[in-house]
Length: 236
Length: 236
DNA sequence: CACGCCCTCACTATTTCTGGGGAGTTTAAA
DNA sequence: TTTAAACTCCCCAGAAATAGTGAGGGCGTG
Image (cartoon, rainbow over all chains, first blue to last red; front, side):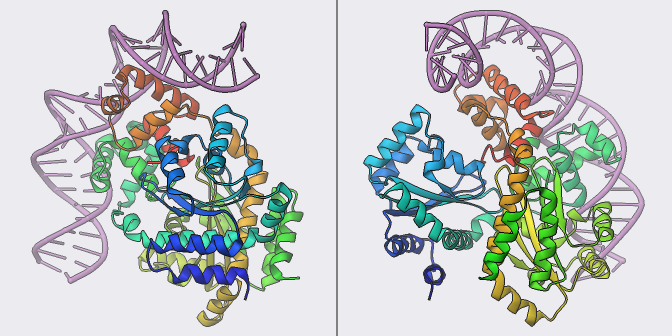
């Protein structure tokens, strides 16, 4: 039995969001690393995280709003494939002081993070940290990268499944004309332009926008377009 | 040597976007299926695709704007994990007639599609189609799912690398206040409300919105928010 | 066949947004 | 240290969006 299958089994055994916490602990022990952490941000700003970091570090992280400083977050948000922390940009002063503080809290000297993206703008990170030499860490990554990618994928799938209600609960159905209208607005067309492209009067177009706004529970046109985009109802 | 490693080698050998086309053909022959297709849609509506579908079908697809009808696209846009086409919603009339037409063009009776998401709202699909029984197809998926997930990932990584300029060139950097402003607008706040929440005057807020609009190359506020969202610069 | 939903068009008044200006302070990077 | 960028505030005129209401024809389901 390969490591991969063991890990997938651990994950599929989980029956609640809280159990994912235990899975991270099992993964940590299994791979013999300092920490294993999984956390996400979805389209409406809700957050969830689990992992083996100390609560002190997590609290400090939240308190100091390190989400907007952490080069791991910033770097992974812009890239597709997994990243060894050594490859990130630690040149800014804020980043270096953050790194030092993280080290003080026992995060470890090495890190490896896999960005995972789901529907509706969901963005999650699966991270492993350890204390070892650069060479050892590079070898660890080389050896386990593929397995970890699949584990991260399964982890996110599981987390999404638990939160299914949160995501799918309020996804209204827009009519074809309403979708066209929202799409054109998302593309930057004014009402007049959009009406022209749809070959209807601007009055009619406004009816669609209003209808879409109400269905989407939006405060204004911008909000409606943003929600339609975030919900994956339209594509620019 | 496993299938997986063969496939990864095929991919890493590719040195230009056009060569990905040949990789899809190799993959098709390797797995002995009807078609292998990879295509993406990015945040500003640019599209790229390669694969073994006939040009007739691709032309017809584009001409008829099937992008907005195809249940594979719609379904995958809402889900995270790979999907057997049999699991999708083919109940609408438009979907059924689309399926029939696709079948006439030799797409195949079975399909398996892996959604892949990258930074800046990039969304790609990696698809395999075949003509066989439901049971055979389910078994094929069961056997190759993990490998294919890694292949799809590598495929997208390669495609992204080739298009690096396209994506990174058009990803402006918004300042923290500009990001806050766009985020609040995406959440449906009016300018007055957003200014209030940011504890600044509405005049100042407007400066941020204008700056963000110019950086994003947007025609109006709605467009700017839509682009910021699609580019993954902000999260609602 | 009725019912609901979609598509189309119209009017009015009020509120909000847009697109130009200019100008000073603070912060961070080179 | 210098320099660029970010942050903050202000004015004005015109364009656009919003919130109501109303009304008629079409299409598909039960």
